Image 1: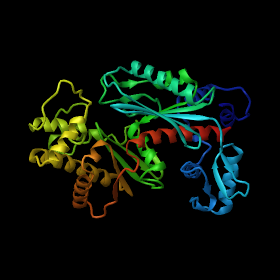
Image 2 (image 1 turned 90 degrees about the vertical axis):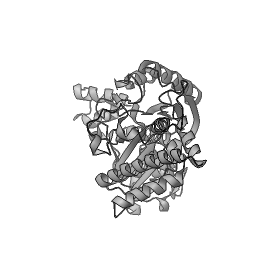
Image 3 (image 1 turned 120 degrees about the vertical axis):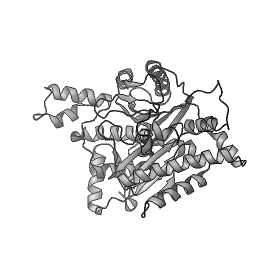
Image 4 (image 1 turned 45 degrees about the vertical axis):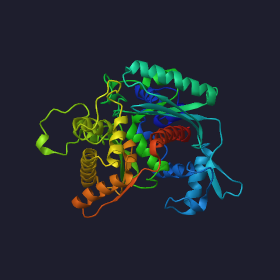
Length: 415
């Protein structure tokens, strides 16, 4: 798989390889891609995005801002790589049929979900299991290996698994691949899990923050299809975001771009000690809503609830709907803080679109959008579109899937 890639970076194309080439092999297997060697350009990726959105696409329906001759030349190049198929009349294109598979994983705070797909992006199987939030990293990796092994055996067949992509509840350093800090999981700091998974399955393993994966999913098949610049904001057990700039995910220096849970929206409290969840997350999250409701006397603390369990937040919304004024006050404050958070992000990034997702968006979507719009319009004269996700809790899985597919396509094009 790596031979053709090495020929690209070796002047004579022979089998002799220096330290740089050997390091590149290791990085490709573990999911760190040298972007200078990527044979797929941005237009290729946008084409493949469209082809994987449906089983077959009319060439006349493909939107790439290039001439028909240029599109056909691009398709022929990808066909020669074994990525694309054309019908006999060359009027329709699709991803080439094959038995290769990709597994996507969403390692959520309360659930871990798995998806098996072919290279056309067609979902072949899904699996969901309750996460155990107090598990240490090694136990979690062992469980991932066990479950992926099962799915691999049942749905992939011998040597047909081509990549594993996982959305994790932590920033992931773009160079080292370390999980920097899963702020809601004790002991998850500078965790290296990619190498163990890559060794277990001998395929590339690609990791990224779950909100980044969700943003990719929205760009591929959700509310942000084709949108160049947008913000994805997830408000569930915690809060986080993914940022797209010029059709590309922006990760930042350490992979922490979009970690809005740390944002402070009250300058007077800049020197206070906040828990690992940060300032904004103490308000705008399922756990935050439940905690404020307990402080307001709406809810009692339960010894059965873990710190990561946000089910009590649903009871707060239910109490509000029954006319409880304290519950209404808590919800209004939370949604106002969310509005200020969105307005601050708009001030910095000036996006075309803001997509909101997560369990809290289900509590009262109309009230949430109304409050956010009210706050943002008070602060900004020109407000971008703000809408609820079209994918819901599937966004992270679809983002993981596309991340794996893109890596496989890149490898095929390099070969």
